[in-house]
Image (tube, rainbow, N blue to C red; front, top):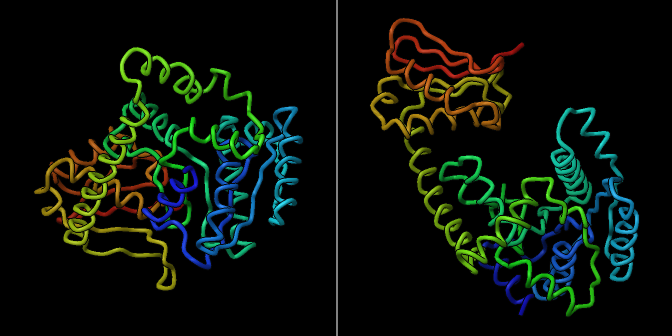
Length: 337
């Protein structure tokens, strides 16, 4: 039944095709071990290849035991297994970021490394339905927009796939027990230090007990609806962008990297304010590959500047980003320091 649900998700989102090579991210915990074990059985039906990537964060005393457990499992089934030990605490200190962020960055960097080395075309991550519900709740607490309600995408960048995204944690733990996988449990997940642990261990159980015993299912239904709405809005924004974009330019003709975007000021100003904000975010993403650092206040300031349209005006939301209004055009550009 469990593997049937995983296969159904894979087919539903067209995650894996015959001949694919999939890097499976495996920590040794219940989620990743159930993912690996189920994919081993499913690949007899679809015929794809599997390699494993495991990161030892060097934080907990049992980290080496977890690494050995993953290696032994892979040896038993003749799976190529890549292991990397990274001092995540040291990395966090040197980069002045949280341990959680440092660990995530280290993992995804290593997954990419293995992905390239193995000439793979998919990376399988073991996020499940509970993870998605937790992410949605965390986004709500932070004050998200509609896009934050869609949670964790089943497929991202046509490369990262999440075959367990529609399966709840209780089903995963039962599958591990049925298959006698004996996964390693990360006891730090029980410590209510990080926001996610508080949501997982305190908030969701309280909501289940006091309001809705099926809260995971309910939030995931909301997530799917938000995803549909977001895709529709994104399509509207993309079409409007094509209509108002005058040009995209790079530093040289051979570069695919966009350094500057020019859009029609009058057409921009005639759009709904919500659309105008989304256009700025889209332009920002096209130039920088991220919208990090551009906040709601910056967007509102840019919209006001464009509405006034008096002489030559410009704003610099950060040291790398400049937006100027001049002669009926809005120019959004990367600043080289």
